[in-house]
Image (cartoon, rainbow, N blue to C red):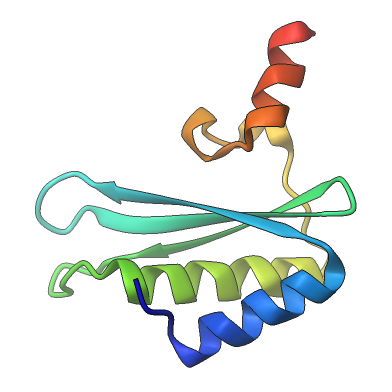
Length: 102
């Protein structure tokens, strides 16, 4: 899948920070679609979300760019997320394993 210019820039910045990203695309019928992005930088988590409006068409490409941009904005504003509040489908594998052990 090709990436937007904005997403490429955000991924490049995230790579410099030594961070990772994971996406979750959600579709639940008409008007209930969106994309979530979770980034991990220095053992801290930051979330971003993009939701479709009633008249929008779902696009993974655009959703990824918006969600990642919002997660990066949360990183810059130090808006960390609690790992317990993040949906299991969005968590990184090693975080799921740590929570299962606890």
